[in-house]
Image (tube, rainbow, N blue to C red; front, side, top):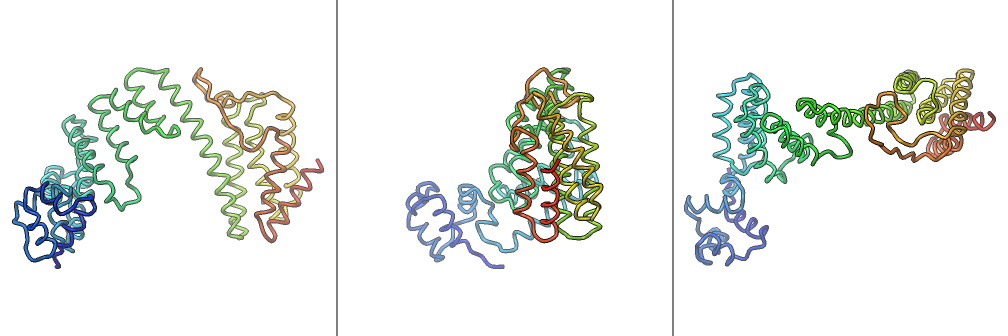
Length: 367
């Protein structure tokens, strides 16, 4: 165990852009005292060390420089987590209180403690537990720069806070969720809160947008996963990719308005063209041609029809009167969009797949 008090005082003073005189004034000591601390020729008394730790917004252990403190923090947080998982909340609270006294400015301790009250409140629906969770989450946010866990972020913490407000004050919960509703990511959560409050149409507005986002994500996910499978070069993976594209095509059909030409026609063409490329790779040329002919029929119907550009006007699961505009980055007409897509793929692909995409393009142009 090695102490680095002198180095840490100097480091944190400089991090705050303070001179020795500035730190001395803030703590209420002489410049000479600060100088001796940083040289290591003297150390502050325990009360002054606590004041320094509080001033620098760090734990006392961090100020003193115990190189084992990180392990101790990990052990304490793990012990709290284990107690929570066993629903031994009273013991977890005692362990949490002890940890926060020792490490009042350590992010991991604060986040673990907040999670304790979050899970307790989720079970008990007790407003005091929810309030405590919010209080500690807000403290954790002040120290989020210490966070090294990729699964934790400012967004995830603010989402937790919003969930806790759902127990205390639904209106405040809505306010919090709207603040972090980036690209509509919280529309579903907002809708659930609105339903609890009896605001059905507002809930349906948000649910419609959530459905559209989910549709777009699912479609894109299937398309890109299938293409990623082709990169392995394994025949078994390419067959799986074809199955995934078939599932995606069925998924698009399930959202489409029957007997009506919409943007769904163009959207459906994309997985069909990708499927045609994979069928060509597998040597199933007859099926490839059938797939391309079906895609061409969709494209012609699309190009000959003046379709709506509102996203909520292209799916049968739309329950809002609000217009949700859709932007099509692939181009205005279906035929040339597919040509552009295939030509781009030819530039990006190599070997056998490159030749297969070229065959698909040649056949597409011949139709």
